[in-house]
Image (cartoon, rainbow, N blue to C red; front, top):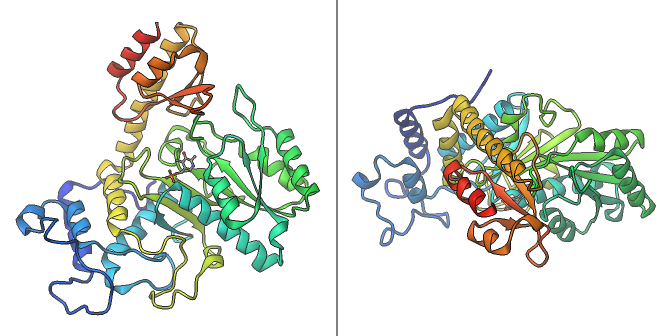
Length: 407
Ligand SMILES: *Cc1c(COP(=O)(O)O)cnc(C)c1O
């Protein structure tokens, strides 16, 4: 079933990464005089060949390839083509094998994080409405839920478009069609005609997953012009593996793009927010003025580290698709164990069945316990909830200590 994602041995990974680095420019062996780039400062970073010869990621950091621009379309900086090809493969793994797109049907890149990837999506859709519908900026808005990440507010502010938030049910964290209808009507009454809709694939605080039809049914019924982005910054490497019937995939024609952060559930270095979008849309943010960059620039960020893309590629192929499924399975089992313990103590909490976040009502958690176990509140000033996130290091042994204290 997996077209691009195959488990590889450490030896294979090493040979592929070193080969990719070979296909980049080599500042030592070639005369490269015209780019403001070099390897990392060798007075500080040990470049001794024997030290790094078994370390493909460290070697990538040291050689410091720049992945500026987007490599899934047109031309890119030829200096770093070797490692850019690995990034292209990573984009295919995510878009095709994780999110069920067709091979070659999506563009994408490794952004600085979920914040950038979300802003990139909203930027593209804002420009697309302007470019193709002669929309005025005041007629365009963002629609998301009150549990959406604050990067939507940043996007609204930066791109100068209004934002409208749909209320969620305070117990189930679900959005309903009627709540979405109310939001659309409110936006329409303020003159909005073009809708950039953000649907959550696991929210930051609750791990909740929005019912996509609660958005698309009213939008279709009201014949709204809309573009839909899925924010899977947290859930992108989790939810597709817990919900075999997930409707949040490229198979859904209403969905145009996704954010998935590898630096959250995939344990990659920071700077690995993955942005994926159906072909034909990213051109709306082509900065033609980026004339010194070969192939111009379709991204928000500019220069970015190629080592980040390599790190995510290495993580995915080292685990392989079945290894990943098992990793998530274990986290699900631990989460279920913890939910049982909490229920036995009559502690009130929220958990989405397909998620590894448990959010406990604050009256059940004394502040001293929250701080001892590093539980994160929804609001530092006036907490209503504290969350537990069952990551790789959050073992049952550690959870037991929390249960003991809660007793
Ligand atoms: C963390 C998160 C973001 C922002 O991601 P950064 O990588 O911190 O910029 C956006 N959306 C959701 C749902 C998140 O959990």
